Image 1: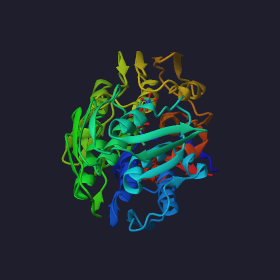
Image 2: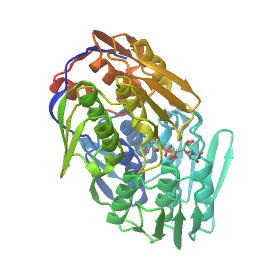
Image 3: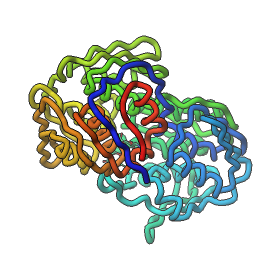
Length: 416
Ligand code: UD1
């Protein structure tokens, strides 16, 4: 594994393109097994999790091809619906295969995803939702087994609008024999992207983006072509980096509406932000303004995935900011590392109090999870002196051309 070395203090200036969304491409790849045909997915970033999803598809019998950012999945023959532990444990979101594999093959078996860097990652909501539409699900010995029962749809209410549970249910229900109405569904843009993909395959899904999704089952689906939406968290990362380095940036190929909550915080922090079509322009303030209270919430609220990035930015605030993490239990691991760079952050439970400092200084730090790792990189870009970030495999899980993009924007950043 390599180390990232940054000599900070260079404002990011220029224009860069936003990659396709990791969190869209993963469920869409899982959904390709729903038809006995070929799907072409464009805008696939080169990421470890995408490779892992392709390995799962190939193990199941699909033929996958990748050319640049286009992935072709031929799911004509599916000979295996049991996914081995070795593949499952590489990526938490492999559980999204459960609904699609069961609907296509009549049964599926996979190991339980277990906990991760962010705390426990239960799948009780996924299981409960699948049961409501007539799928028998049992858990034993760290394995989840699912089998079609009276697969006729039904009414499902999620106690919490879980993104993964919403996706899993949608992917199973599209092939059910009846109608499914899902209430308190997740409203994230990735859910809308999945709905669009499924409908292009011939499914009948409506309501994604609202808290009620209606799915009318169809007997079969067909292969299709689809371009995934831009990655809103990568966009947020680059914008926070621009703001905290005193830069001027243009993001191309972005979807401003998807980052509405982040743009609003950047404006509160004093940045000038404008959106036009698929472009976002940002001009950093002289000094970051503190933000009284920022609370992570399900979409359209402030995304938990952008929390670490905004926390990094607020370390340079001209006063005290407070961040409350309401989605995950353990999402402040980057704070200790930011303090090694001179930040002044106290965390207690789900709250972080960030007392702004005039400058950060370079240090050796360790990425412990994906977005927290990216937060250390952008802090390094703004810090005085040299920052060395280890644990970079976490960062590679979500960013395709992070280092190259930062270099093109004028950062002094290299891999060793
Ligand atoms: C997805 C995203 C992840 C993002 C998260 C929240 C992907 C691949 N990942 O993850 O980047 O941070 O949404 O926006 O799309 N929960 C339960 N039981 C369940 C499922 C979830 O208690 O069965 C809890 C989780 O522990 C967590 C919360 O619900 O506290 C949110 O989880 P969820 O929305 O399901 O996130 P993911 O789909 O795993």
